[in-house]
Image (cartoon, rainbow, N blue to C red):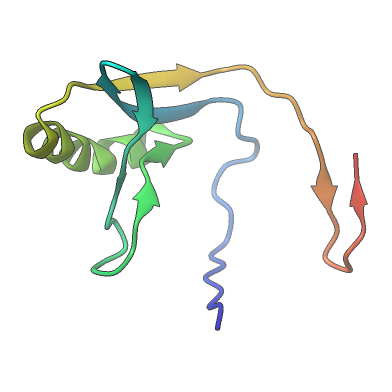
Length: 92
């Protein structure tokens, strides 16, 4: 069963996203951690600096435990690909 957690949105518009990635010999991978508690795995992605600060300890722990460097990257280009309506149809 899917459980929906839908708090009010806080930003007027998401124009940048921060992401923690681990770095290895074969490339990069998105870091994830049990941010919401045991049994969860959530990608370390933030849309504002306040959220980013809460994810930083997780990124540091991943670097220590994995022995791999972790990079913080920032994406600032936005392309809207689709909108999914509550009643089902998608628009491209």
